[in-house]
Image (tube, helix red, strand yellow):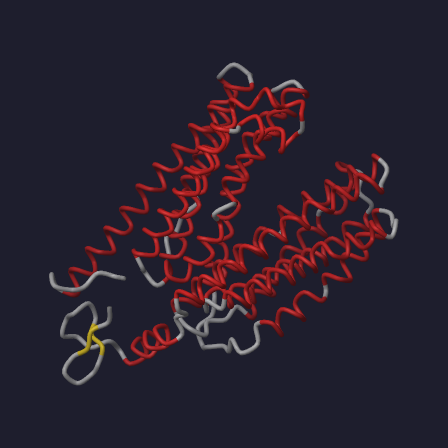
Length: 436
C-alpha cells in the first residue's frame, strides 16, 4: 500500500525520499482507475465469453469450407488460415506491449508503432506472393488481398492493448468480439453464399477494413499521453508470443513428420486436449497482465494458483473420463486412446503455467523472456528425432519439454523478482513495504 509523509506526499517504499511529481501523478491515476473486484469479475466473464466466441468462429471457417469448397480450394483455405495465424502474431505482441506500457504509464500510446507494425506484416505477406504461388499454389490475387486483411487484424492490437492496460475489461470483451467478427465474418459470409476461395477472401478483406474503424470507437475516451510504445516493446512481446505458439505446436508438427499418417492423425486428436488445457485459463493472464506490469506479486501468485487449479482439474477429469474426452475431440474411433488423455492434458496445463510466467517477464521488462521457450523447442526437436518414432515417445517428449520449460521460466521469474526486491530494499531501507 502507498504511504505518505507528514506533508501528505507519497514516499517510495517507506523511505524519506518523496516520489517525483510526475511519478506521483501516475501512481495516483493508477490507484484511481483500478476497478473493483466485482467489476473485474464481470469483465473477466465477458472476456472469457468473447474469447470462446472468437475461437468458435475460427473453427466455423474450415468447417464451412469443407462443405462448400472442393478439395483443392479447401487445402488452399487451410493454408491461408495458417499464414494469417502466423503473420498476425505481432498483433498479439502489439496488444501485450501496449497493455504493459499503458498499465505502467497511463495514457501511453502506440499510434505510429501500431500502424508501422501492421504495415510491416502486410508487406511481408505481399512479398511472399511469388513464393506462395509456387510453394502453396495460391493465386497472387489471394495473397495481395491477404496482405490488406493481415494489416487490419494486426493494427487491432493497438486498441485492444489500450483497453486491457486500462483494465476496461467489458470494453475489451466487446473489442475482442469486434475483431472476431471482422476477422472471420466476411469469410463465413462468402462461404455461406457459395463464393469460391478468391471471392470469399475478397469479402473477408472488405469486412476486415471496418475493424480499426469500429475499435477506435470502442476505445474512445482512452486518451493519449506523451509516452509511446517503442518497436523494442512490440518486438519483445511478439517474440514471446511466437515462441509460446511454436513450442506448444512443435510436437504436433513432429508427429506429422515422424509418424505414419494414421498415427499422426490420432496424435492430432490428443493435442486437442493439450490446446484446451492451455487456453482454458488464458482469461486469467489477460486480467492479471496490467497488475503484473505494475509489479504486483499478489497478482502473480493468484494467477499461478488459478491456472494451477484449472490444470489440475482438467488432468483429473481426463484421468477419469479419458475415453469420453477422446470421443469428443475426434470421434468413436479414438476412444481406446483415452488412457493417454491425462498426459496430453498435463502437457497443456504445464504450458499454461509457462505462459503466465512468460507474460509476467514481459510485463516486468525482461529483455529475452522467450529464450527458454526457443531452447525448449530445440530440445524437443532433437529428442523427438533420437527416441523411437512412436506415439507414446513423442507424447512423453512433449510432456518433458513442457516441464523443462516451466522449470526454466520459473527460475528466471523467481530471480527477476528477487533482484527487484533486492533493489527495492537497497533504495528504500529494510522497512519498505512489499508490493501488493
